Image (tube, rainbow, N blue to C red; front, side, top):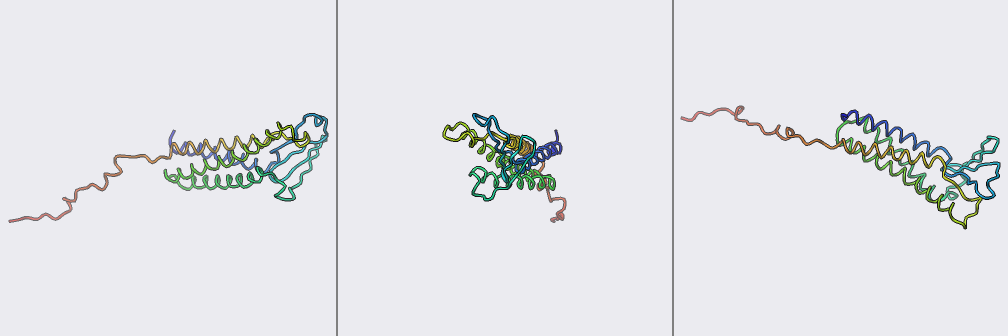
Length: 200
């Protein structure tokens, strides 16, 4: 596959990763209610995201409310806000740079940007997932406060993997090729251009 084909594949992977990152940020399904113990019989499901929390009734009605204060959020969600937004911005900049220039050095910069963006997306969702599993298995946490992994956690993992794949492919195919003809242009004899002198 040529370099142009690799760049097209990386562009597609980067766009899919960006869509997954936007969905992860916007949709309030990072944590959902855990149906255990007395919570099995319930008429509503509580969903928590980065920007709001929602309550879904058994009738299908949904009511969402934005967080009143940033201090209400746990530390993992506070960090996730910043990291996911930076990930989206870095992905957009890397894709725009990749579209504007096709030079190996510029492509390498875009690849590094996509790799960092993928890590910035995987780290917060993995951190949130770790806290959810830890609290779920903690007997000191009340059953009503226990949560399960929401769909956005898995979407974030998938988007991060796509961005890492895009950056990894670009890194592999963006190395400047060392050609033997690159350094030979300056080695020309100037004897032909020099005026000939006749000595008697």
